[in-house]
Image (cartoon, rainbow, N blue to C red):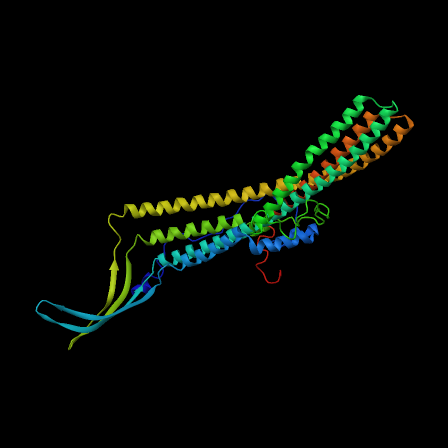
Length: 452
């Protein structure tokens, strides 16, 4: 009867899903129902089989992701440590007993106990909710680790291909400048070029040679980085990447537009937002547990004891309610409730800050991605025009309409334009990755069997 009377006495605030006042301009860029992007394989937009293989290998071998997965198991185990409402315990021992002037007696004794804790104020239920929320936090943290891994492996691959492309360009530049040096020397023999022109041509050859070792070292650094992300020892060149310093393929270039989410998508896809929201939920549940501790607790239990030593046998039992009163004075316990309330308000503020930061990430990533696409278009045009200028300059030298210095300057301009284009392609790829990561896209890739 007491349990029925107290059933409606649950204490603690009820959880309300937090909301954020998104601006109308942000939502207006997309329409339709919210789209879940957690399984979106955006890196496949580069249409690069090597990259796709590296991603799959990293998802199965990366140590940070394995550690995040193990934390889910830990969180589940911690949630299971909350005591059950009903418990059954017992023990059995056997041996000899005796004393001074008493004969030794052989026997055994057993105890069986039962306890049933009423939870009218919802203290245990609040602990269960908090534990379940922290399991969800661990799960979202694994999604965040997966998203970080996808970003890391893709950017490392983009940087590797950039360095390999740079090496090709430097070697091509070196060959071109060597041919120019031979031309200048022949012109010098005929008096059409000065000693200064020859020295300048030789200096450009030496300068280009000095740049190659640094690029080769940068390639090895990126190969080691990829090996670590795959869970392999640095120095072991991943088979999919190859040990060659020069790649046979071109730089990765995204061939599909990035999926742009609306605010509801942002809340569903970003792991950091889900982490903050679940931590807020756990903090609210902790308030309920702290408030329940302010009130008396009632349990119903009993114990049966049996013993047999020598020829004597005995039994004992107990059954009845137990009322535990909170400690007096209750100031420290009430202060603990205030601590929990403050923690919940802080958690809500952190959630709002994470949403605000997410909006900033998306807005900045959109601007950067758009700018990179325009830069690539302009850089390609610059390379084409610079190459035409070199061809025309060589023809004009033969006709006496241009000088050696004009040719050296034109070749230097081509080298700069080629490197600039390669850098812009690299930045475009990185901005594409950053935009997708800022949307939380792909954080749950591999969780669903349908993805495989």
